[in-house]
Picture 1 (cartoon, rainbow, N blue to C red):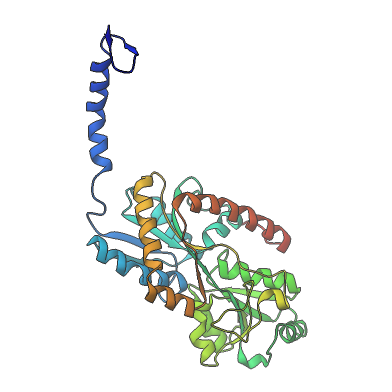
Picture 2: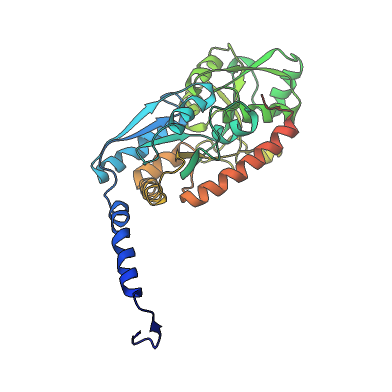
Amino acid sequence: MVSHGTGRIQPPGILALLFAVAIMAMPGLALAQQKFPTKPIRLVVAFTAGGTTDILARLITPGMTEVWGQPMVIEPRPGAGGTLAAAIVAKAAPDGYTLLATSPAFAISAVLNTNLPYDPLKDFVGVGEIGYSTTVLVVSPSLGVKTVKEFVAAANTRPGKLLFGSTGAATSTHFSAERFRAVTGIRAQHVAFKGQPEFLIEIVADRIQFGAPGLTVALPLIKDGKLVPLAVATPQRTPALPDVPAAPEVLPAWGRDGSQAWYAPAGTPRAIRQQIGREIARNLALPEVRQRLQNLGFHIAPTTPEEHDKNLRADIAVFSQIARESGLKPK
């Protein structure tokens, strides 16, 4: 036997065995150290161009392209409340070159849709959260209301006659509006659209009467006087609309849920997801990006992939509770 400086006696052949193991591990080590990315990254956006998820992607990806020297290709694939895009990414190779950009609709669909073409928890892993939009309750100017109280009173004079829009069944905009409806007790009918710009145009035209979009998308129409904001679903008033009350002031049981986030197919290496997550956080910290998002009422809150995975499970639990309380049943 051979004695070494540690005082331990090494059995014969142990050094040869360790050497063999090291040699066998070298291909895996080399693979782990390969440069990423070496080709374009496809970012599948779950909603239409001009929506919050798309705006965020177009703000974040230019800086990533510049640093990596590889383009981030944004591919809007709206439909079915974000599940169409998710189904595409779920089937992609788990190599970091196909990612999903989506909203709280991802967690909501897991609660309200029993026939998804994928398993939200088994077929995906988190890349990182970006933050959350300020949800704003907006109504058509033709209603002639200026406050939540006035709106509820007007809706109660027309039970079941008012229409509200969303980006599709089981999306965050649908869930927020349904939660508002349940909290206030008003009766209204849901109309689904492909994206937020589409249903906001319908409110402006008074073909539908209200909705709960992200402030990022609705703000230009609010500033032009084409939409009337009644409340924001945040703990405090937003600097973007300082005269509009926050939910705790007028409707404490209404609030915001979930986050905008990026996902990858299950099996995507953690090191790659961490690298992408760090780039998301770095770009969100850029002064010009941060300022623009803050001006739009967007709350920046990046996370690690591990935090993202944990938060997704927590969001699903919260949405399940809210669905029960609001009378929303899985389909």
